[in-house]
Image 1 (tube, rainbow, N blue to C red):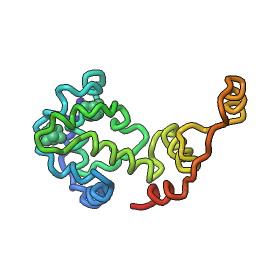
Image 2: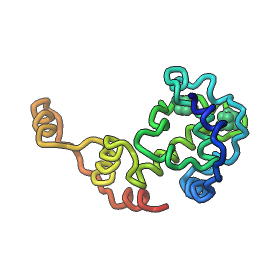
Image 3: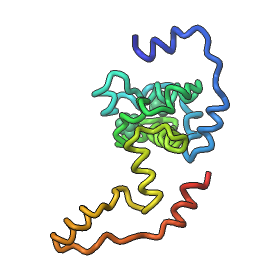
Image 4: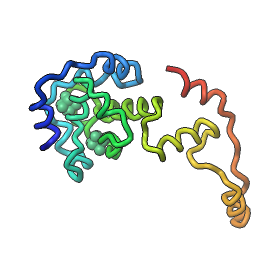
Length: 165
Ligand code: SF4
Ligand code: SF4
């Protein structure tokens, strides 16, 4: 059964307004409120073309209905988005589905519900300001290649930005 049919056949669903408020508080998350479900974002979406379950219109609909358990979790469809921004160009309502998806991803990281790899990367960024951990092997290889040691960056301001809501 497709996600669309599942949504249509569910007998009762009380809209989770608390989740919508939480999403509204994440930068760009509020944009889900403008969607009128035209489907223009789906046609040229490369992730939709290659995945049966991925559909930006449905992701935004689930946000509107407050399907928090489906959207905010490591196995959520949101992680299949390629960040290409095509949907943003197509949407007549300026919803920018990609921005809603990024807001959902940020919510996942904030609540510790992102895939383990993403959670690790965000921790590394928080600690060092860069996305990849610098190990002794990294330093040794750089030395062998005649490269300078990896710079360290002040991260206090970055932490303030990340930790601010
Ligand atoms: S194109 Fe915009 S308004 Fe239409 S379904 Fe997608 S997000 Fe909603
Ligand atoms: S950015 Fe939009 S068009 Fe591109 S893969 Fe993600 S949802 Fe699809």
